[in-house]
Image (cartoon, rainbow, N blue to C red):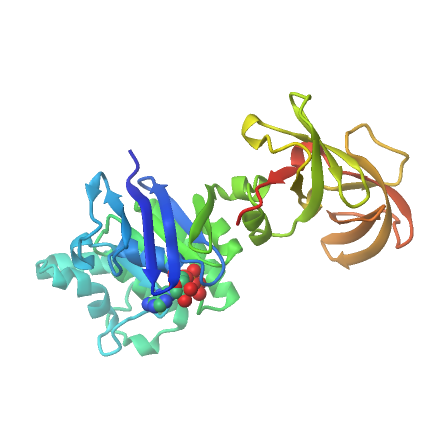
Length: 360
Ligand code: ATP
């Protein structure tokens, strides 16, 4: 049984459907990300988990217990949001102690737990500091200490690092994941930043338009996007419009590209079996396209192409190619002597091509 489960939750604000029939399961000890563009419903989903909003429909369960209608206080989750929300008139100690005092813990326990929490976020000795004397990163670490000191069943983060500069954000990110893992806590982390989600999370749910499009590990989402929405949102991709021609091959479906009329073979599983003679969209990452100047190489899906543009970017080079009207972008580590106007052979390994669902 999943630790946290959201079953078909929906939330409307007037005519705006912020979250639509969203179902999700998070395991105990998991660092789970909710990723998607601005306005896709991430924050609303997190606020419903926190109890700050009530869903219009659906159920939220923790460890098999229905908490859909429970107040935020009774859920007792730890929360860290973007605008720290530290108490400016209290010092660091009192900020971190806040949740323990609210739970009327004895003074000795408060002191030792606050000291432990500050040690965990690498701020020991800062107890007496006023919060405005701290840097943004230190303030955010105090907010994290305040959330973990109550040893919550669930930690909820909403873009907590977005006010930090890049170097500090990356450092705090590493520390945060390490800390959550060390304490064995379960965390849900909302972000619109793919790098951040990939660096932090064991699994990620990608949202768009109030819906959950796909859930998976960073690698699964990156290498096997199931829909156009996920493929578009996560990194660069070539999208190839094509017509499905046959299904006689067990392992490979045959597609004809609309631009260039090339035949491409793509491994097809039973659930991917789309309609024959209907347009489909295929995707392949630029780094999975290979380029050679030799006559051909022994793989399927080798097309003749002309180099249109070569953009050197230090560690990698981006090459724009035209294969009889099919525009492709390849990302290569080393490009030996190719210049615009040159002919080459381009390989699209069948196993690297995805068949996308149109929705999303
Ligand atoms: P961001 O990354 O910009 O915070 P988000 O993915 O977290 O976006 P939400 O804040 O959940 O998205 O908003 C989802 C939709 O619901 C948006 O269209 C938003 O305008 C709308 N919305 C959110 N909160 C309210 C509210 N209190 N009243 C009315 N509409 C709201």
